[in-house]
Length: 288
Image (cartoon, rainbow, N blue to C red):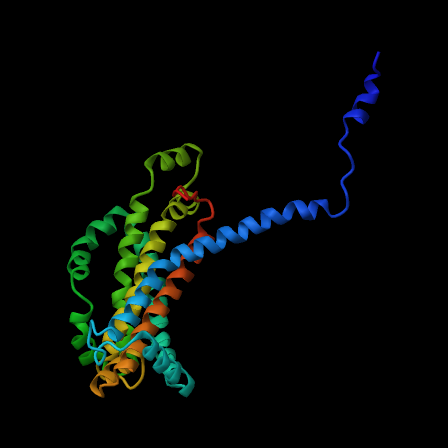
């Protein structure tokens, strides 16, 4: 008869040799690194293809290299602008105006959108006015801003504020109105008052839609500002592009355009990371 007390000893696994755990974890680490590298390469294919076409088309004579110089020449011009300090000056001026307008839009449009989406009488009162202004292009109002506020910084920041407010405001309203009614009824059945209902249910459910509006506004803040800087500005990426065009410094012009694209990409990625921080409860259901 086998003693039951001895079974755990007989079934125990042999002692692990020193360093075995580290050796076992190495393949997993290598697999993760390879997977991350593969994802980066996969996402870079389209950009690499565009860069190759941009470099090769002018050199092969497919396009006039006077009007579209090879990418390598543009990058050389970009580096010269960066080294001379001109690019930093223009980027600093544009980012100051853009971030100021975007920040003011976030501070004003989100609370207003929450109020309009939550209180139906206020929504019915302001709905006709919102429909009028949402269909008015921001650049169409540029002369109005210049006439009223002048050619200085105030008019440019105000234009960015106007352009950024609408995507944030409309997405905030849509996010509040789009909350699942079942969640609201369930919260009310648990005895939550209006303030707690708004804090615990409405606002968290509306966060993804609100951040969609903020991301759209982040793109608008750069695009609208560049157009505004082409009128009466002494610094900024829009001024750089316009000045380079008039002086036929084509590589410098494309350097400004590339810089704008890079800034837009960085701003979008920062907003995506911020959205993930404030909506950690969401589950990514996209296919890998």
